[in-house]
Each structure stands twice: as structure tokens, then as C-alpha cells.
Length: 181
Image (cartoon, one colour):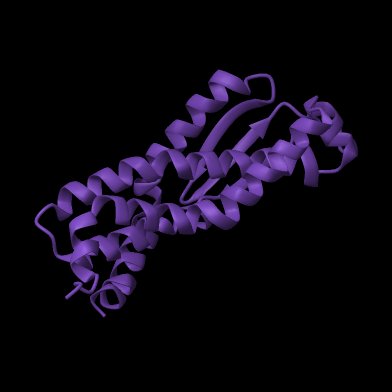
């Protein structure tokens, strides 16, 4: 019941503070893009909770000089942050602040991976064959991107916070188990 009480508060704080809370994830995305996708992405920008990838890809139907941009809503992949916060605050353990900081630090790179997978899915699969051909991804790479997107959109955002919470709150979880007589 305490978790249900903390959920609305955590979601409001998360939604309002999303630009600030998710800025470190944008920095991770920028670092990953710079290290691996420099030929595909010329810039990564943030506007509130939206990350815009400015690509080097050229839309076929538009005038020369135009480039393709891809927007990704980070809120779709970051809803585990308020879930983890609500669970942690509801447990009322002494280490709550430390657990919140640790959970935040662990979940940020996962959010960044999900954002990258969404971007790659957009340019390699859903943008159409003319754009996908410009990316240079092979068939197996497009399959890997599709898997990463599915895993990153359906499983990771919901499961990672719960698994992390259980890992950090072992004593609390153990106390919930019925004792053998």
C-alpha cells in the first residue's frame, strides 16, 4: 500500500524533472554516438524529454542539403525511475538515499541503450528502404537492432527496476517471506 501511495508522487516528480533527470542519459547517448556512430549521426540534441538525432542521411524526396532527424521520447524508456523510487521509498529502509542514487546510476545507462535502440530501429527499419540503404547495416545487423528495440521497449524498462530493487533490498524481501515453523 505504501508503494501505491508513493507512485503518484514519484511519477509527478519524474515527469516535471525529466529534462534534468534524463540529461545524464543524453550525455551517455552522445558519448556512444561519438564512439560508434559518427558517420551516421552529426548531432544529438535534447528538448525536454525528447532526444533529437541529427543524422547525415539524406531524404530522397526532399531537396539536396536536407538531412533526416529522428526524435525519441525518453519518457517511454525511463518510467522505471519513478517505479524504482516508489518501491525504495515504500520499503522505509535506512539506506533509502543511497539506494535511490545507486538505482538512478544503474538505470541511466539502460535508458540510454533503449534510446539508441529506438533511434537505430527508426533509421534502419521503419524509415524505409531508401534511408535504410544509406545506413549500410547488413541484414543480421538490422535483425539485431530489431531485437534490441523489442527488448529495450518491452522488457528492460519494466523489469530492470524491479530486479534492481530486489537485488538492493534483499533483507526487506526476506522479511516478507513467511517463516517456516
